[in-house]
Image (cartoon, rainbow, N blue to C red; front, side, top):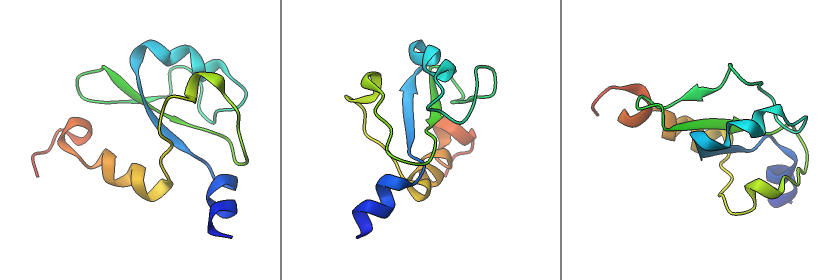
Length: 83
């Protein structure tokens, strides 16, 4: 049952900046210009809409849950703060 709940929720991805064109998809929550980038500006966070989403460009990337992305965004690469 937990897998169904996980798959039905928003999923998050940390992607290379070259994949910004994915923000134009109707399957993602944010739009171009509203993305969160890392300090170096080389990566950004993509958040999918609720529900099972099949975006072929994401097939080689690992989805993260809301809890997992919160942990990642607190790392120095994203927050700019040394832990």
